[in-house]
Image (spheres, rainbow, N blue to C red):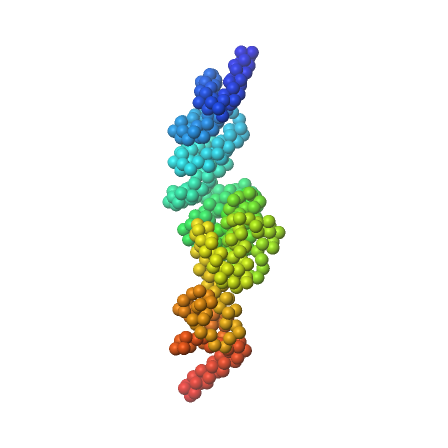
Length: 418
């Protein structure tokens, strides 16, 4: 026993000696860690720890082949050499820092090796599910959707066992994580029917205790879905909930979500300042959000010139966000309609060239705006294309004229039928 204690102490001393060389002499540290693994007669705690430290150094040095070899060796310790809780916690930590790698190939190998090992351990299904979910998210990031569909099928089977209503609190939480992954896939593929079904299912789960980040993903995708459907108020509510959840989880996605919240606010033509809310107020001056606050100010004031200046100054930032960029033309259309209505309000006859000059657009674009504004009842009047003017009426007179015109048409039809 005394001899065993002495060996244990020697291994411990070597371990801490190696750790002291990690920064200044990493290769020396690797050599000592390797010696610890070789000297340990039976696989145990110090060999396991030496593997972990070796993996960190190899990862930092981007020695991916050596990393994979060492990782496979570490997994041979997880059954009996160390406790299940310790090995699970350690594996989670390793996967967490490896997930920051830009090498898709390395990540795929690490996840695959982990899953193959855990498949043989029937008592560690939660960790297996968690790693499979990470693998699914990797495939989503690199847009390998065919393989991702296979992963989703495995995750669904693990959650329900093939029985749709076989749920408890733990399984419902896993199901929410699965839905978040699947909802993102359908958002990427513009599969609105499946997206809507899963979105409604996820909000119907009450016993789950998901991480706020998961809730943020579900509500953000729901917001995008509702925005695409033209349901701007529902989109606003979704984006606001997503922003709060991302904020709570410390996710960097909260800023993008705040931009979408402002976008929905403008599209629903609300006069409420989205930054008046307690949760969003602290971000009003955030450098990444200032562009949106400027847009809101211009939009609510129907200041077309300022709105276009802000867009022009931040063209690259907006173009980088493909979702945001896809709605810019809608916003421009709305603010030009509003600016047009403000511009011509004092007049009864206005030249199209005058409007074009003031709004910095072509006369053809002015004509399109006028037609839309007249059809939507924003302004009352008609376009005289021959003279290139719009002739305006007051709202009450226009409605009276419209009613008389309808009455005359009805009377004409009646006389014809008799």
